[in-house]
Amino acid sequence: MATMKVHGAVYSTASQRVFACLYEKELKFEFVPIDMSTGAHKKEPFISLNPFGQLPAFEDGDLKLFESRAINLHVAHAYADKGNQLIYQDRKKMAIALTWMQVEAHQFDPVASNLGWELAFKPIFGMTTDTAVVEEKEAKLGQVLDVYEARLGQSKYLGGDNFTLADLNHLPSIQLLMGTQVKKLFDSRPHVSAWCADILARPAWLKVVAMQANN
Amino acid sequence: MKVHGAVYSTASQRVFACLYEKQLEFELVPIDMIGAGAHKKEPFISLNPFGQVPAFEDGDLTLFESRAINLYIAHAYADKGTQLVYDGKKMATVSVWMEVEAHQFGPVALKLVWELVLNPTLGMTTDAAVVQEAAAKLGQVLDIYEARLGQSKYLGGDDFTLVDLHHLPFIQSLMGSQVKKLFDSRPRVSAWCTQILARPAWLKVVAMQVNN
Image (cartoon, rainbow over all chains, first blue to last red; front, side, top):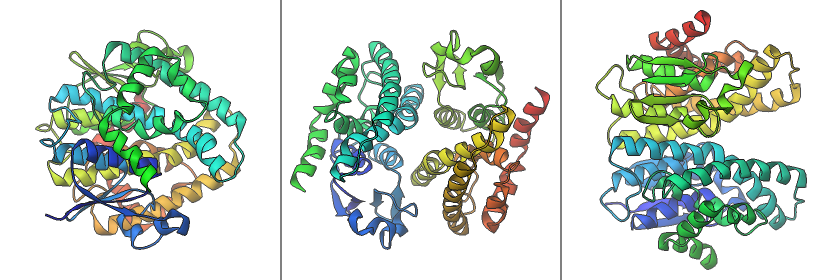
């Protein structure tokens, strides 16, 4: 059987989302680094794997996929018997988990990515942080986290009583934002804070973090 | 089954389309957003804490986020009406293009719908600079769709699935604007739009707006 491959970069949050899933499932994969500084993600051979020219892309035998959340859903279903369960088999429980996966994608990620760009990436590139944007986005993220705080008072994890992709898909952005002033938004909400501490401490996630130190 | 939403809400329309394709009976519970701000208050806010339409009830199961609702319906009622998902490996490719609709197409389409369709309705001015930038971006996305539809009859595979369905509300809306030309000028995209917009289930959704 051909090895699974992830074409991505260790500092790419979307690539990290997929690494996390593969480590949780204890699946072997080959990491194919894509050097975005040379624009490799916008050229062949990468562009044939993802016509939108974004990391990551994924190969599982002859199946080629892109979009980290789709990759993770495939891996979680196809390898349901391996490693940690990341989805539910029960239809109703899965429907609720899917709802909170959409929440991560549409409510959390856009504002978290904006803040990550302003506070974590711009300084690295020598660009100036836009404080007005930060203020606006922090307020927005606070509103989202208020909903999470209520949800996590009723449910151990976002998608239900078990850790699933609904939680995992947050890890790269939360890790990134914990290294910025936005940390206070997570820390000041008790259920959210405990949930973050729990998921950030997972062995599979620590392996993803270690990839950045080692590369 | 109940859908708490509004006939003019694109996200609600996404769910109506799915229910009509699956030939499932449902009750529409209209949520008055414009007049009453009902989506930000009880009882709606208990159904969706993010205060956005639609919300959905099937017995004791309550869901929100239109794409999650549709995935649930498509799987739970796989034996009814149109097949909207695949089993096995083919579903992985459908998942990919569902993400494309949500993250590549959706945001830029929404921007154009706001500027070209909603702002005029609300008596607000269209920002031409935003339109120009968003139209260029949409063109790039549609170039990729044009290539994809050269390899695949529908976006997710050889059959109509949720991938194509999820595009319907924004495409319908944009076909009534100056951005129509972006779809019409790309032959495969144009043919695909014509086909999916003509589906009987979608025509029922369009009729809901006329009748309400």
